[in-house]
Image (cartoon, rainbow, N blue to C red; front, side, top):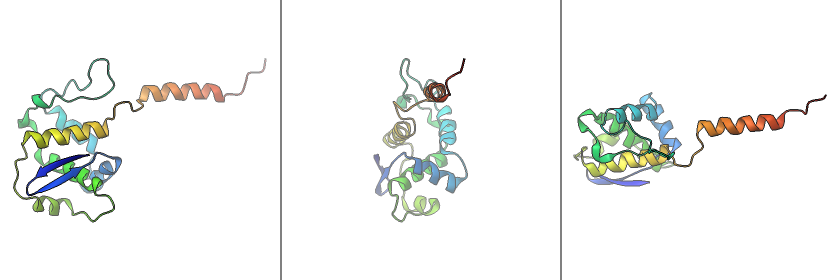
Length: 150
């Protein structure tokens, strides 16, 4: 969870499966797909994987802000803020944007916090990847087979 200073208030954001669901319901698009599109437009994103590690890392200092989709960024923040406030009333995207007041969307502290939360929450280090899943599934299927009769 990260806390952002946006406009005239503090906004807590949390990258969870609920954020993925809220984003899809509200914007009829996949949050991770949109996040990757946004990331591809920023310099330094092409090499997300650090050599020898399984976790994703973004070079926040190398971002090319001219390629940033600001509405998509607001949508990402809204979905993660709504996920953080799960179980409590939360405004629609339009109402939320109109309520936050003026702020610098290109503030590096906001961008860094949002991208770090998204990276840490949606691309968790140590999570099982597809290769490990397939390997483990293959091992289990061998164990579940009936012994051969010969």
